[in-house]
Length: 71
Image 1: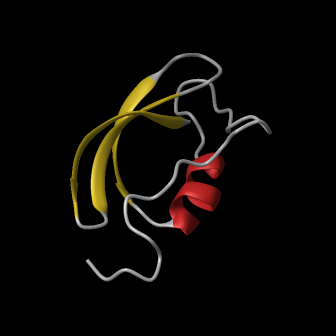
Image 2: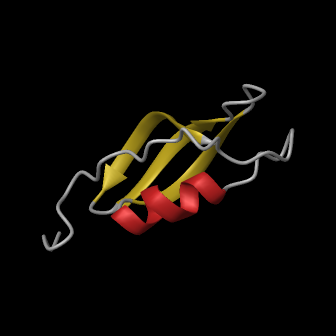
């Protein structure tokens, strides 16, 4: 799964539409905008439709705020 479209963000909490790179299934998910979430959690998400995870070519999205920035 990867982020297809960000719907809203308040501080580090966000809601986005995620899409599966394998089958195209979309799902709205609430997430947390930090490097750990983008680098570890998202690539490990399993698509509820095809049960596959992100491919090895997955590139994490940059965070809106830097890691040391308090928001």
